[in-house]
Length: 92
Image (cartoon, rainbow, N blue to C red; front, side, top):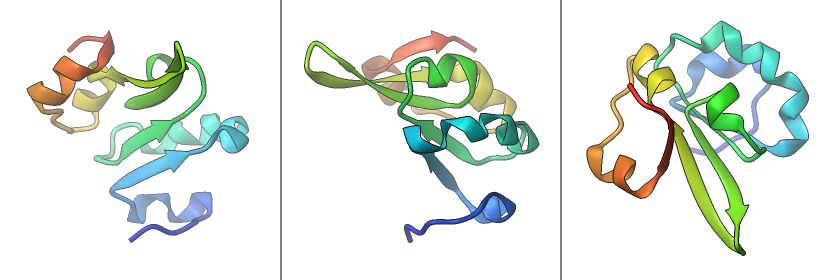
């Protein structure tokens, strides 16, 4: 189920997508850093600085980055097949 939530409902999520328009709320992510909620963003450096998976445009293509260290800290397991396709910004 996809729905818009407010920050007080974050713990009810399995996956949290944070659009660029909400990038000012990255400080709120510290409250869920160690919870098993996949965080996905679309701003430059999102995976390296704030979350688990970041999308960006490179040479007119959408590519994604994964922060394996942050995912492991949250108790998440990222498949090796997905890691092979991604640019891993922090390896676990």
